[in-house]
Amino acid sequence: NKRNETHLSHLASVGQIAAGIAHEVKNPLTAVKGFLQLLKERNEIKYIEIAESELGNAIDILQNLLHVSKPDLEDEPYVSIDLTVELESLTQLFQDQMYRVAVHKDLRDPGSYIFGKRNQLKKVFFNLLKNAFEAIPEKGSIHIEHLSTENEVIVRIRDTGVGIPQEKLNMLGTPFFTTKENGTGMGLTLVFSVIYQHNGSIDVQSAENAGTQFTIAFPKGTRSMKLKEVVYLELEAATD
Ligand code: ADP
Ligand code: MG
Image 1: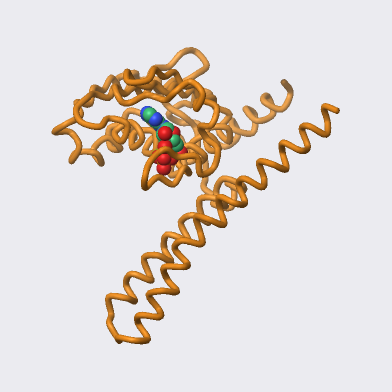
Image 2: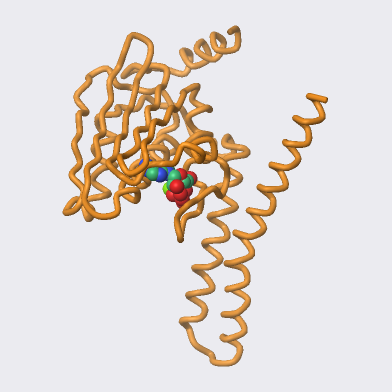
């Protein structure tokens, strides 16, 4: 029956995720074991450094998962975030790519404030931008814009990259789903999770070999929003 089916598919996806975690964490730990072995044989500092960095990878993977399953563990305060400032400064991180990717920005809307967790939201935009750059094999362009309506702030990130085949669109956000050789498949998992935490929504449109556009919408914040208003927003959200 319907209920069993749902239950079974839930179990199947838990199994899939568990297999993904086991695989992802096993690789760096196996490497650490190997380098400790080498260290025992030849007392060289470089093996300690490699082992350290592999352990860092394992911790990052677990950290991402914790973040996704229990985002409030990182108890960050809600603040007013000016998207013009944040998106400008995030795009600067990709300076070294700009010889091949033209970045067009339309970040002038004066009403584009979100009330949210700054570091988490930075990770959202950083991951979307990173994916956009990675989707462009040689030359291309990326458009970043934001605009505000009466109730919402909308951010669009559009690239002229490889695009996403129709049948893979609904895999986006599944932990460990990646088509990249060195991908983690955790980027969009984090993106989706943080956006939902902020009562936002995300939409993707894509055409193979043409490009992809992500549209993210958040409830509108103001420059001087205080905690009182969040409680109010949450109460409103709970009543619909
Ligand atoms: P990763 O970048 O480590 O692969 P993500 O969760 O960030 O993991 O993305 C998952 C997959 O979604 C990518 O491997 C890629 O196939 C697809 N994807 C995400 N963003 C884009 C994009 N802008 N253009 C094309 N494909 C994308
Ligand atoms: Mg990514």
